[in-house]
Length: 276
Length: 120
Image (cartoon, rainbow over all chains, first blue to last red; front, top):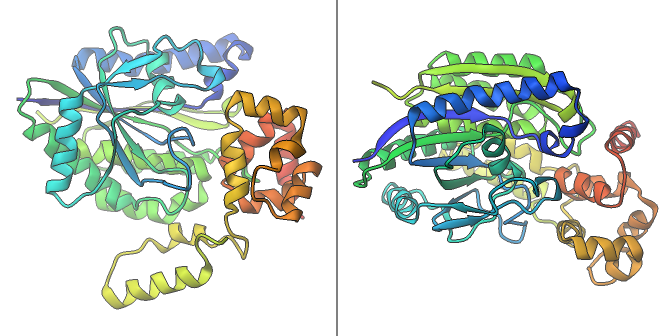
């Protein structure tokens, strides 16, 4: 039987890749250490499969067909196409078709209707954390794309429901696999808006405190009220909500947080332990 | 062509009230773009320009590439003039930022210009 071995979160600011060589060495070292903290926990959890929850940054989808949720069921996925991601060592990432299909079947059985893709291109949202965590070997990746970029987006409560659904899918999977969840993105940032460059540290701190409280309903109310004011990039915290709910709404621990003006993002890294 | 108008939003909220459907009004209010709707042709141009070959062609001859897309005249003019005040309300903010990066505008300049746009 499959086993849930923990949930994790990491920011994925693309400028971490694009501008890496221009950063002061102290920032490079600090970012490296932050990603290493998550990597250390993931390696200790020994996952065979990572369900990675991230947005699609106009890579696979456009407004002619924009799913709220898409599950990648392919045996493999294409690596990132962005020019700043050419040094990412994986041009192809291994998927897990059987588990992906099981997640889709579980969803449909519970009246969720995700979009399904047999071949996704994983952009920096998926690949930047994997790159900077330097996981070797890389576990199989089952991508779960949440529309965090273009309204209308799935509600926060629906994202929590998706998290609980993933927990059910893991618990009911007959395969012998250790399965983790990695939420990619957030916290506050603003892209292409008049507030671009602003980082809302009070929002980020309050958001972290809301995850620490083990009260998912309160977390949902907080995000419903505050998320629209934290910059368009902050909507990626939906991915954290999926991870939080999959972990049962408790066990959150912040591994690191600091605003990084060089990449325009309040960067954060976190871990939810699997219930004993 | 508008993809989601204020009238549609009001009707959605009315249905929500009638049927008890839970709607996150704060979030969905983002779809009300203050009278300017998503411009499909412009969005498609920005999306397609992520491909290097097309971006190279666009940088060499904007008008030739623009001619392949359904663009209204004010939008066409705004593209030639780099007029952010016309373009920003019509496209997703990520696509807007990608576009100005593709045509060579530095982030710092983009931020200055988008802030000026907001300040009128």
